[in-house]
Length: 349
Image (cartoon, rainbow, N blue to C red; front, top):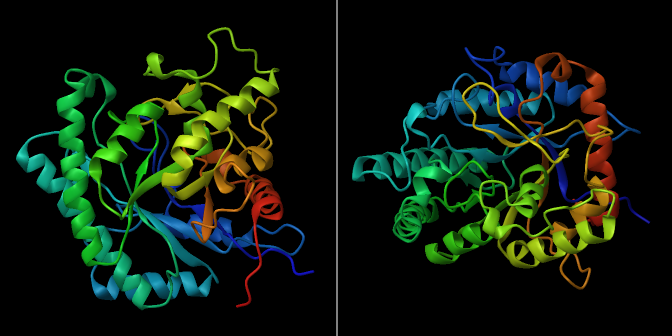
């Protein structure tokens, strides 16, 4: 019997950037992230690729063709492929709020266009066999809540325009389910936003650390699934909660992050508080990573969805000293391999 070789196992580059900066720790450069990723190995298995953050100091959203050729050559030298992108849609990186002014929303769409153009070029170079472009609403829940209906309509309109642009490049957009983004900070709100976009190339990006907090109603108490007095030792209730959540959002899921969470929120640098990404072996982690990933990777009948060709680990806002340890990435890779063993498949290559 062949070992599963799909989904491909990716690390993420953005833990080297997100949550870093003047108010936190210095960023970790892309070369270092590539080196750490390529050196990880568990029982002869290695990472297959990395998902990218399209912003300085990693990869400029305004990269030239020559820049991209050098990037592709660099990844090839590490025997790693490129997967999904994070598009820098926020005001501080050239974008703007998806429910903001006409200029804000146009800047948002422009950043998506640039990301999709990069994606197409890297696909043509053969270094990016699969992946999507990740977006969010680029606005906080409090601002969204001032006019929930109107602001959701604006976000959906911006996302529609972004989807139409992405379609020109053969790309799909994945809206990130994270409690710090307005209109996306609760599971029902996220579903409403996705349905309002009404485009075939919009989908959901599920991150196990973030979506766990949907169950607790962080920032959206009226959408809480688990009881107020929930005991984390009550595994049966947690499982039922995950089934409720994934039944609604799994059909939309086109990008998936494996992660661990201790049930709390955390933010560093200029990143708002969101689901705390714990190390794969953290004893306080509330998820059974391999088992709980199955709620997203299999349908209600236990059949693999195979809706995406790779999965990615997200260790956002890990301290730099943790990220520089080889054990961290071997533990991560080991957790990813277990997910693939339980919920993967084999394809001849």
